[in-house]
Amino acid sequence: MLYEFIRWAGAFYMFWLAYDIWRGEDPTAAEGDAGQAKADRYFFRGFVTNVLNPKAAVFYIAVLPQFIDPNRDLLPQTMALTLAYVAVATIVHGGIVALASRARPLLQNADRMQMVRRVLAIGLLLVALWLLWSTRVSNG
Image 1 (cartoon, rainbow, N blue to C red):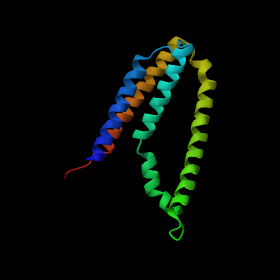
Image 2 (tube, rainbow, N blue to C red):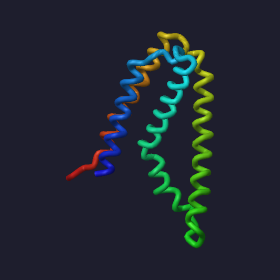
Image 3 (cartoon, rainbow, N blue to C red):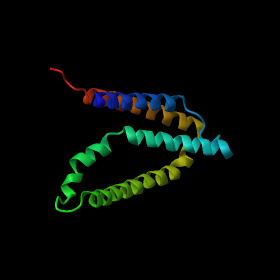
Image 4 (tube, one colour):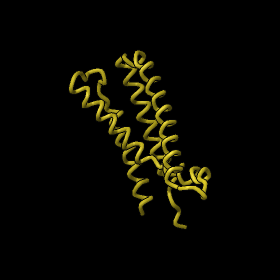
């Protein structure tokens, strides 16, 4: 039951993100305090997206135990491996942010930005539908 809840919550969140991307808003319009509020909102959105993504849980269940020595304390090993995982993920996400900031001048054009938003929204919607289809549990 928890699996189904998480699966549907993730899919509905992706549907909402697709809708939000589709309707769009000018990201360059925010200045000052409004800009900080928008940055906070984007941070929260990224956080929720990562929490609803089962990839980390699957990683911990499938990969992490292979690197744990059963003859040593579990907590220090788990903490070290978790910190390494977070460090790698931070580097990867930092690289994505750096590349996105480099692409920003290409997306400053309003028409181009709307086209990119629409393509990304459709892609996200398709991924959400694929997620629901591919992760369904057969009762037969």
